[in-house]
Amino acid sequence: MSASRRLDALRAAGVEFVAGVPCSYLARFFAGCAELPTNDFLPAVREDHALAACAGAWLGGRRVAAAMQNSGLGYCLEVLTSLHLMYRLPLPMLVSDRGADSDYEEHRILGSRVRRLLTLFDIPWRDARAGAEDDDARWLVETSERDGGPAVLLVGKEADS
Amino acid sequence: MTRAEAVALALSLLDDDDIVVAADGAIAREAYRALDRPRTFYMLGSMGQVASIALGLAMSRMERVVALDGDGNLLMGFGGLAMVGGLRPANLHHLVLDNGCYATTGGQPALSGKVDLAAAAAGAGYSWARRCFSPEHARMGMETWLAAPGPALLDLVVDARDPDPAPRIPMSPEQLAARFRIAVAGG
Image 1 (cartoon, rainbow over the protein chains, first blue to last red):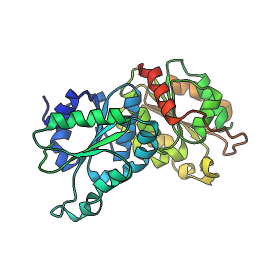
Image 2 (cartoon, rainbow over the protein chains, first blue to last red; image 1 turned 45 degrees about the vertical axis):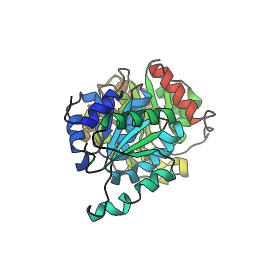
Image 3 (cartoon, rainbow over the protein chains, first blue to last red; image 1 turned 90 degrees about the vertical axis):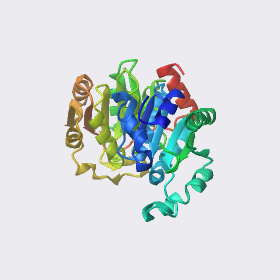
Image 4 (cartoon, each protein chain N blue to C red; image 1 turned 90 degrees about the horizontal axis):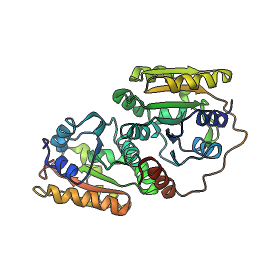
């Protein structure tokens, strides 16, 4: 058991390697990651590098997941399209759902368009539900492996990490 | 020494179980032409991500992971250098084929002539980092680099000219990834 129910759920669903850049909405998740063995967690310096490292770990035979604030998705488009989608590499992604009207201004422009952005690239997504961490994690891992590509769980402030 | 000659020389010095990540563009095509091996991952896009992909592999495998990178590619994803230096995987060996320009797109000059990539790697935390200017020392430089404790980076200066461009790789991305993962991890 870690500090994070979502991390525990992903590990139970088979995830062995996590890379990401923190978001305050995912604070507990990243606190749990910090306790993992050195080779199981990469604290990435930018979101696209986290995704590329996940590609490497998957190609090396492991099940992976990435975690980030939704503001990092812009950096990720090139890697998502020319690595994960093109080579068909599974990638479960935990992405914070910033940008509601009550959120800070810097989150609103991208945050209000994230679902449309994912839909534009045919990336499956689902809203995380508090108390349904195991089901959310299973959906995320199974969808990414079935499609051979990214799948996104959007984690809102109330959904808890 | 052309970049293609340096790529071929590096591949000839590797062990059979070494894992290779070949940078998108000319380097991957040259690696494929010189010595195709299932344990080489050929990048077709995602410029700037060579070190990050290699790091994910190095954290997941016991075997040596060799990244064949370009100078413009490394500069685009300079944060990858920080991650390798910070995580310090002992099995990661990083070769920069440094022609000082963006050869794949027509030879536009890159900033690598003004940025000391080996010093940057050492500053980031690589265990070993050197620059090699002279083609006659390339083989010795590579042998020393491969024997050095990882993470180790060799910044190898190569010709900017590209007299014999390698053709595109005649496999689909999906085939390349599946073949690589089966060769490295059994599927």
